[in-house]
Length: 217
View 1 (tube, rainbow, N blue to C red):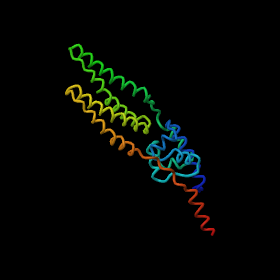
View 2: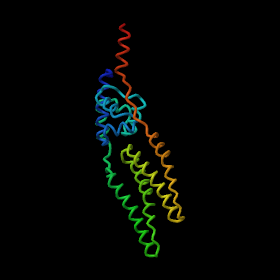
View 3: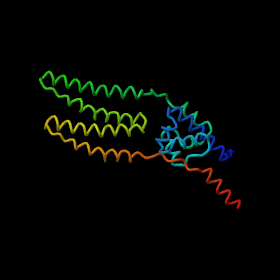
View 4: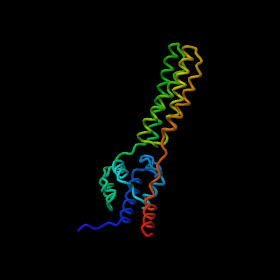
């Protein structure tokens, strides 16, 4: 015989499961909220059992944590899912990013030395390493890092690309086209506007309370 679960009990079960799965995934409430396009306050309310995510968010969570929606709503299912999951080697993302960027600059230095030995001195090679470094950081941070950091990486990428263009024209054509940097202003504004502010969780409890008051009247 199936045991009936009350709405409050369901909230409590879901709250425990979200908190345990988030902790196991090494995510802060803020980071989980960013992945779901919600604020950290919304995640905090879910984990305190004050509200429950809607069906779409539960589906997003199930895909993010590698569990079913049913396991998010069932008592003890999160622990069973975590025990059943095969242990994975955790990637040290900051170290991989640092090594990758250092590799790019080491390659730039190698090219500079080779050209210098051939009698060609081109310091602009190090300028070219800047956008390549930021592109590498953007790709890796999107996969392993904190998504909100992409705002700063993309901004740096834009200005480094403009600097690369400027230095290329200046070095090989002796053209001082500083006006190219004006392109960075609208590009920067587009980037800032493209990063959405997380949505607050709908205040279901207040809505229910208000409906109850209206019914009582």
